[in-house]
Length: 392
Figure (cartoon, rainbow, N blue to C red):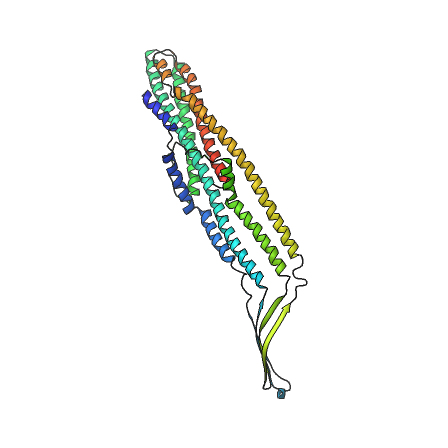
């Protein structure tokens, strides 16, 4: 029985990265496929990409037809007909086409960022579930041991070998552990329900009791990844879009032209030929260039601020992750020489210590295990946050 306890605890320390990654991959796949917010985001992306192609072509041609009755009737009737097309300078359409490409790119980046955010939330739920699983494994071990001791205490009480206080202590230990396990079951069910919602209603089993190993990304790797992250690239595109807004505003200060065909027929006389026109921008585009310049400066400031904020966050999270990794290593090193309570159990069986002394001595051991579980969970969550901040 003691060997069984020993391997049950050691199971939570085994580096089962491949197995632990399996359910996480299933969770991520389900989120990408069925998450309602991502489905809506994909539709929004498609709509924005379609909308980005509007306004980059020539205006609609204008057709004019007039029929006027003469008075007196002897003067005859007049018929006018014309087809005209207005247009800006060619540079305007070239710049609008470039801007359309950037807007489409931003629509895709926005969807990608939304996907990353939802996957990150799913990862956090998965990490919490693994932590609960690890805690449940420890609780189950303790309950099996407590049940064995409670049964033995009952026999000892009937023989008069222990008093009723020791017996009730053994019973209360089992009941308390049972209540703690119930709380963990409730927590696990809540986390599973949240994960099911993120997966679009799909249930993905999470039996894992181990986390994937932490990454070996350096600070330069993470900052390099940040430069290509959707949030940074999106703001860079926004700066380019605002710059094109300014260029388009400047181009729109140039005259607009109109050209076409026009004919006029009056009492048997017909006149036809070319019609042209020019629109001189005096009032309509007032302050548009200055407005575009200010918006471009705003976008640049937002980009600089985001880069600075993310870099500070990455530095902080990287330091936190490394310290947590060291803490986890220290706890594991301390636990390895005494990885179960078999020696205490032998002392209890031999009558060298009583039940109260046994459980008191176990407190330090189990506290170390709980610290290990908590630290491993915090380490995994910090790693997930770090990679999310860096755009990994």
